[in-house]
View (spheres, rainbow, N blue to C red):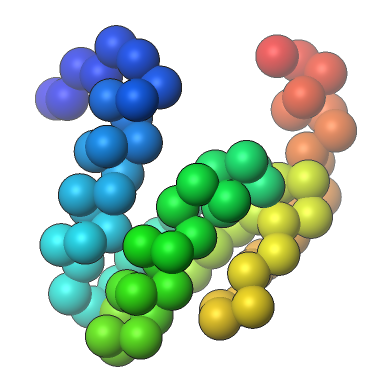
Length: 79
């Protein structure tokens, strides 16, 4: 169990996980996350890591396929 208490801690941990990925990486992202993690994700793709990204709110990444989640507005409303 990992207990992360701030956005900075969450992003730091995500960057570490991306940097350490060797084969596959599965992530769900909002565009703000993709903007912040994009360089690290691109580097992972360039070193051969297979990325599987589910995007909320029309996430766009030009180096991998993003599977758009159709319930983003419902999720935003429930938050």
